[in-house]
Length: 159
Image (tube, rainbow, N blue to C red; front, side):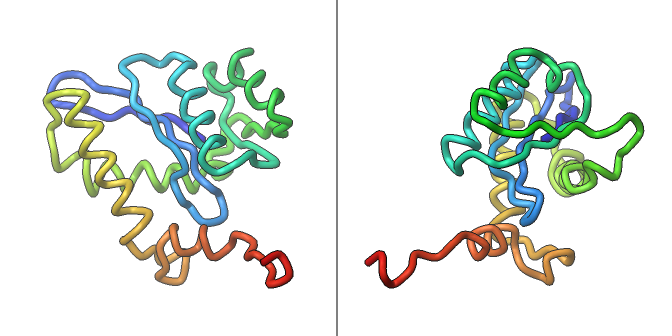
């Protein structure tokens, strides 16, 4: 998980996203006009509700991610916490690559006039990015294909 700023015609908003490290699939994302902890915990809760509880969760050492509310949410779910070391940008390279794609392929092409316009445009782009855009690092597959193909298949005996 990470946070990035999103420039708009006047001002900016913050974008937080939770991704699956293996498939690069965006599991949840939220926009906020402030750098509070709540929009980060909302994104994590959304990812857990929709996709289940991960074994480990990685972030940088930002104040949102080191807060009692955020770390408490993870420990309450039995999730091990992993935080990048100072200056270790490579630890979060997959989400940094997502930020670059979102900004150059969507945000910089549109000067959003409102938060709702930003939410709509970013949402549309994320859906395209995970469902239709092939990724060279995934052997020209989409994050959706890689993510859903990696899930355990029900056995014939369970039927």
